[in-house]
Amino acid sequence: MEYQLDIPQKQQIDPLVGSDVGVLLDSKIIIAGAKESDVAYMKTMLEISGFTDISSANSSEDVMSYLQKGISNDLCDIDLVILDTNLAGMSAHDLRKTMDNFDEWRRIPIISLTQESQWDHAQTLTDLGHGVTTLLYNPLTAESFPPSVMTALAVKKERDQTYQQQLELEEELAMLKVMEARLQFSVEHDDLTGLANRRKLEQAIELSIIQTRNFHTHSALIYIDLDRFKVLNDAEGHVVGDALLVQIANSLRGFFSSKDIVVRIGSDEFAVLVDNMDKYQALARAEELRDILDGYNFEHKGNHYHLSASIGIKSISADEPILVGDVLTHANQACYTAKKRGRNRVHLYNPSDREMDSLRHNVQWAPRIRAALQQENFLLEFQPIYSVETNEVSHYECLIRMRGEDNTIYYPNDFIPVAETMGLAQQIDLWVVNHVFDLMRSLPDHLSFNINLSGNIFLDKKLYPLVQKKLAQTGVDPGRIVFEITETAAISNVNDTKDMVNRLRSLGCRFALDDFGSGFNSYHYLKNFPVEILKIDGAFITDLESDPIDQVLVKSMIDIAHSLGKKTVAEYVEHQSTMDLLKSYGIDYIQGYLVGKPQVSLLGGD
Image (cartoon, rainbow, N blue to C red):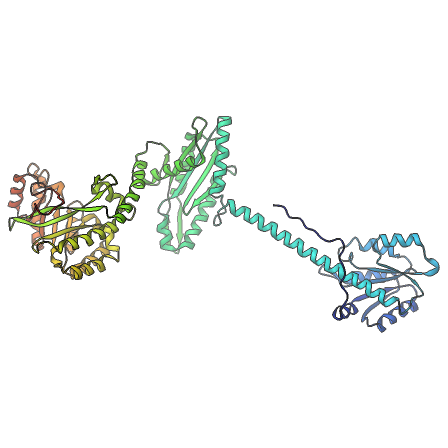
């Protein structure tokens, strides 16, 4: 971006007004001449005309002394020099040449006085050509001298104004150039760390691709993601987090060469583009970096945070046609794979990485789940739960299904893991609760329904008001509602989950702990968690008849549950012999294909 500064060579002088005249009359004037009487005469004429600040000089040394003393802060307060040619050792021409060598004096006008008998036309032209403002000749008159002085001072004022405008324009131009440089820097650099940004990286990758193709070299993009940076950022605040990022940026600068492009991609992600490096060299270099970051210790107010990083590498070579976006994507995917495989490791991009299949699966399924929620494409199936005591079906577990665009029915394993990863599981839970309550309004009062809930739903403030509202609207007995929560989900947010469970139980709803036995602390949570029913993990039931260890474990679960006043349910029961064995252990409820498969209609299960 170019700027041109146009300064007018000539400027029209506006007519003087009263305020201008007052300023000019206060101007500082030097009158220099060899004859004191001539100097006094000129001074008297000017004083009579209203000029107030007039100094006399009778030698060239006095003139230079006044000029030198008048300088302060790169400015001179002398506004006019009146020089008589009878002053020895100094002519108007010489004085002008001297003054033009200094910025402080260059704008001061000179009035040159000469005797009429000494008038030299050629010298007059020479003097005027060298910046002498006015030429007067003696004898001076009161009618001509003060107006000439006033005109010269007006010229000085014009020069000062023009110079000030020039300074302001130059300052503005300098500011604009600084702003332009800052803008250009900000376009290609990160504000916090000063590293290059993604835009700069994309340009550099494009050049690297061209270089590798034309010269058959290798380059590598190293993608760095700090592990668990969010923990520090949330615990200590963004200011402390930013300080750590700046330190990491400086460490990366020191570790890599000045020729390498070090970039902050965003938040806690960095990337480094290294030319003339094959994949083996890149792996070795990345391992060195990982080792350095693994030993990085960040301390704040006595709290120490261990740092590590997951690092992905994408090699750029001549034998692989690739675009800039592909390089960034592959490096990011390699970093994602390193993180999924345990963090604090280096991974070279491989298109067959299975972690990416899972990620692509999530990306494909997330919009389908959102569409199903919006278009009411979820449906419920019901699996009967048999009561050993009454010899009849007393409960139904509500199982969610999803209808695809081609009317294909999808089961929970297809979409629930994605929903939990993408934060959509709570919306599905609320959909199920809403529809089950509406359904129960028209069903016999002796039937109860089990509703599965995800762990994060207990952090959702919408659950309790919804249950409270549906109980009031439908008139359903809250004792007919059994909310199921898995042991794993209960443990993940134990305090919040326990609080919500107690609130819903206060409404009269019941709870079942599902997949019991799958965790290491199962009995601890059974003792302290407020549930009425215990559902034994099906893994202990499928081989119950042939596995004596399962038999011991299942019997102990039933005995302990009963000792705590809780009912028990055995899942995955498919054979009568398994049911008979469970009955001998004192099981309360049976669920599985022996009792009935999940079904859309409840008519056959009652």
